[in-house]
Structures are given as C-alpha cells and as structure tokens.
Image (tube, rainbow, N blue to C red; front, side):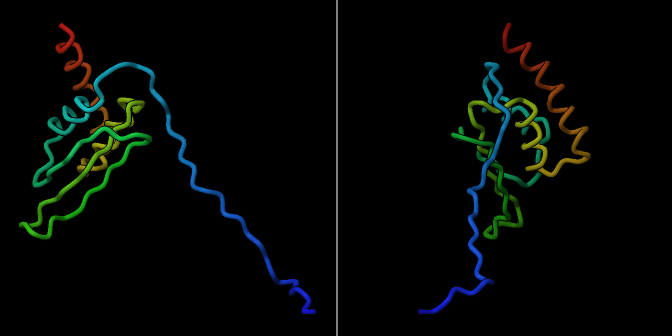
Length: 118
C-alpha cells in the first residue's frame, strides 16, 4: 500500500459572492439610466439598457464591423440605487473625472424626477 505524501494539499474554493446594496425606493431605474446616458452623451457608442435580475452589469467592446464605434450593454436590477446606476453609466462611457461625472448625473436626476412627477 502506497503512503500519502505529506506535501499533498486539499483546497476548497468558495464560490464568488457579490454583495450589493439594495435600494428600496421606488423609481424607474431603466429611465434613470437612459437619462444618465443622454446627459453624458457618449460619442460613437451604442448602448443597450435592459432589466437585469441580480446585479448591475456593464460591458463594452469595439464593433469591428464599423469605423471603431463602441457597443455596450447595461443591465440594471430592480434594487439598484441611483448612485450605483450613475457610477456604472459613468464607468461605461468613460467620463472623467468620475466623481464629478457621477455628481452631474445625480444632480440632473433631481431636476428630471421633479418635472416628471408634476
């Protein structure tokens, strides 16, 4: 019978866990993301916004069939906060400086939300 090497190790890898803040306030998250995109006006970028299930998802890539324009998708879950959506949009379009761009998006929403309620 063969003895086990002392160098043999067993490792257990825990599955990836993603913890995300859940905002309980009621607002149209897709409309907010669309307003943020209109506010930042990404040049040569087509963005598809959809309702995600569990977490914010933002991906972008270069469309090799065109003149170098960008394609992107943005998944917005039903529990995302305005701040998380704003940050995801700013990162997606590459606006900088990031903190200022996020504040611009959030400030624009305060005016847009008030006018849509009237």
